Image (cartoon, rainbow, N blue to C red):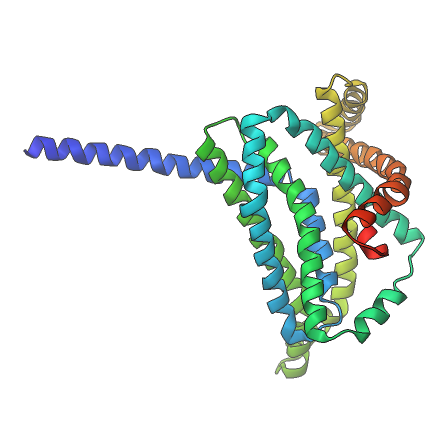
Length: 326
């Protein structure tokens, strides 16, 4: 009896070890795959705060929570099953979809660069917002943010899926779910910190007992607009880099590897032109910069196609007006 009990305990311990190893594998796979989605993730964090403009400070966190819940639903109820179906029944579609998502990132990044040099008029939209009922406007803004999140989440989940090593169905599902939830928490947790940071700074400045506390508070209030501009800049650069690299890699898989091979060779040459201590950094930076330039050129070429052809068709099918077309 004692021997049987010990054998059972050994079996239980073995099962526990396997389960723990599986959990570690899922967590490691989720972290590794999520890193590939950096461009879309940064863009998600940079885009979301604009939907909170014009609301009272007490409504900011509830709106972020509402958008975050919508993002979780997007990822777990719609995009995760769709991604698993793709992986198991149409894996050949993953690369073209990745290239499509990469092209969209390039378009978004190039459009942001264009608007930086040729600002677009938003006065009409501001008037519409000012005239609307606050509760209705909040629902409209949250719904718009969730729709935007759906597009970015689709890119993120597809990129994550491509980075998951081939395994069984449940491992893929667990890794994808963990990565999706983790990214959502990271994005909207960061957004919450960003949008409330000026309030924290104001409270520190107004109620601080020490001059250092008041100075930090004043610095936070004055620094947040510059931080938001920096976040937008980093997000745009990341979108162009990630989008460009995805399209270049996809072209290589389709047999068009000329550009990718040349970028690799040029980056390798740049890395070996500096002292060995900086070789890896210079090579990586050079490749990322060239991927980003390609992404900018591709995105600029896609702007007239998206705005003059795809946008009007989309607006005609799903709704009227400039906002629906955009």
